[in-house]
Length: 123
Image 1 (cartoon, rainbow, N blue to C red):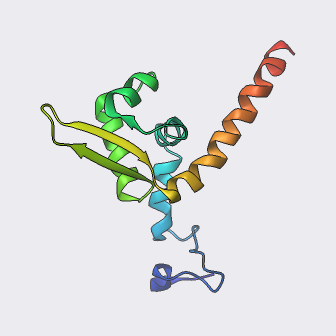
Image 2: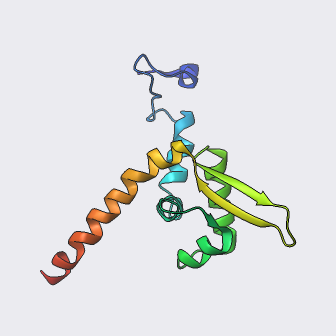
């Protein structure tokens, strides 16, 4: 296991030690698994969406939290942001290839949960 300053380089298998407190992947994992990060990634699985479409589609999220979540996911390279020069500006978000790779298993997980939820609630 890498210790000290070695956290900045991946181990021999090409992966970072996510259990190290200073691992650069930890912040990204925190963004993806945050209360709203998961919902944003799942929402963008089928279509690119504008800010208001994300806000309206993810019930309970405030504009402030959506903005913070989007900013973190853009900085992590999981989603892209396109601003169209209109008045007012139209901002569209979509998944990068990396974001799609990370988001697909999350969407699959939630699909499995919702498929089995009815039987679980009836028990």
